[in-house]
Image 1 (cartoon, rainbow, N blue to C red):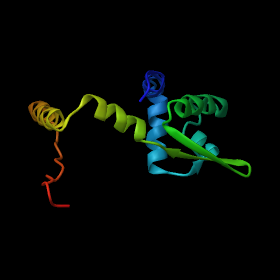
Image 2 (image 1 turned 135 degrees about the vertical axis):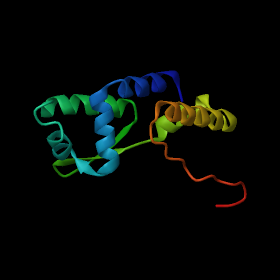
Image 3 (image 1 turned 90 degrees about the vertical axis):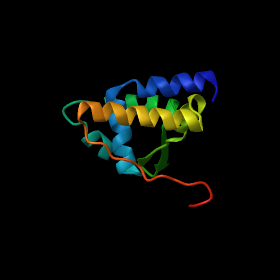
Length: 122
């Protein structure tokens, strides 16, 4: 990932409304701009939603395709995965997950573990 692409992805993720837009697009892949804007009614204008979408597209976190008069939107998780892979290894991911679990346990939060994966098995 080039430095300017990395900066664009971090800039896009720095905004809470944009992160909520990504959450919505993850749950509703292929929705149109009007459907997304409806989720922010009373909070952001349609123009505001469009400006946030431009930032998300510059960060390569949203893919849009124009079909007729509609613009269909999809969440692209690849930049987030590339960021994750840049700073983690197999071992650091394991230990950070263990420390996170310890933190949640100490705080009394409910912890949901992922099933363990064994090498050589799918």
